[in-house]
Length: 298
Length: 298
Image 1 (cartoon, one colour):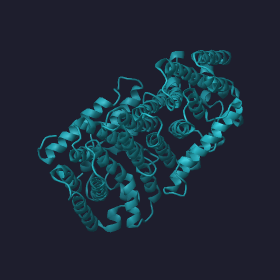
Image 2: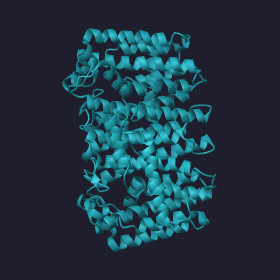
Image 3: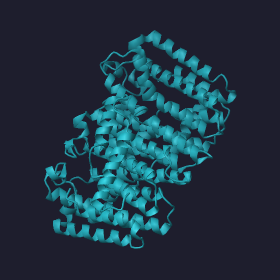
Image 4: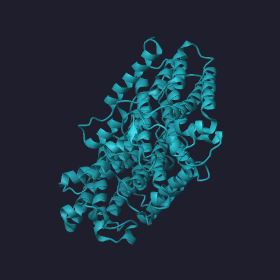
């Protein structure tokens, strides 16, 4: 990646991941065509691509090759895409708008959306197993393991379950934090660690610092999401605004109020920078990315 | 495994996989408890355990250790369990009875069943990555890859999509075969190959023979399923009988008639034995398993 400014770099990553996913996803002309169409619909053509940016930015710290980072970021983004497809289904959030387009089950049908999500998850693991991601294949197995844990019942899927259980309840701040650490935090941490592992081996202290950074950024991401859900309109967000509040979902803004939620996001941003203090300029993209995540408007 | 007769051996494998899954699945007391309950409900307490038997029987051919075969068979069975949970959902087959019990979404709720299936898939990959399955980690990565392909859009999930698309249509025999090669055949082939790879390296011809065996057995399994769906009652099957016919799903019995479908199953059984001809007595469990799959009554 070039030494350009952050907006140019982030556009470059977003463009690259779009190309990579378009290449790696099965073509629509191959049977079963409707399933492949739905998978492509869910994964291509949008999204902030924050997780791929985290993979690439973390890879800069360890000097990882672009080829490896492309695969790792594609795997992460496929999991993210599958989670959105399943999350939007009528039995979950029952949402009709995503990234400014009809959700997958609206564009296709529920059964196809269900299977597309399932197949996107399989494809993510396939990519991580069939491409060289680390010099040491034992490390690559560990990468697949940490990724699987981040996806599963003690990671993202578990976070969705906690979320389901929380609808209509008043959570405490630690309970809300626990939900998000799983629901969005697990995959964000996996993004940073996968990206870092694609390069030269890092010592335990460095990996610990990156993990702390990722934890703060993941939580900040969610706090800002809640703030935006409260402050923005659907056209800006590309998804239904105010929906979480109406659905009785616990949010940081409901719990803390808008001003305190914004302050909390700022504190998490500061802590994410603090976690990167031992790193040199190679961690600058991670720093800029944290700033972007907290200051974005959609 | 002991040199006992086949019924004793198959009971031993079924008992062992039950214990192994009970150990490997997250305990219900760990949060999110309801999700973990649903995962355990879906994976434990029943099923024919045909796929674990295939893993163990194939492992005998290559002299694989029981410890490795337990992990491989657990991974396969978790994928099978997840596919049943998603397949039974209202937007798919909308079934209320499975293994003589309410289906997962009936016992819990749709959202929990959806997430339980998702998390079972992640857990399967986690098991394959975090345990030693082959002396060579590169081979283990290949095993994960072949497993992921078998699960995905060109394997099991793809087969489900072909199945969806076929409802109410008259398929040709090759089209019906193509559906089943994906829907059930892919995971059955993966079971045999994973089991074999857990042991000493086999040459390409042996792996080819095992793959041909698995292809025949997988198809025979489905033909017999269609015959049983036509001939049995729900109490014997532990699931709703005659349902496929009523749903307008293409079946071998609808396409060939009952007598011809049974004859076809017999031909596939003969070919599966033929594929094993080059193997010595270490393939006897595979032979007995093929016989069992074709001659079972549920």
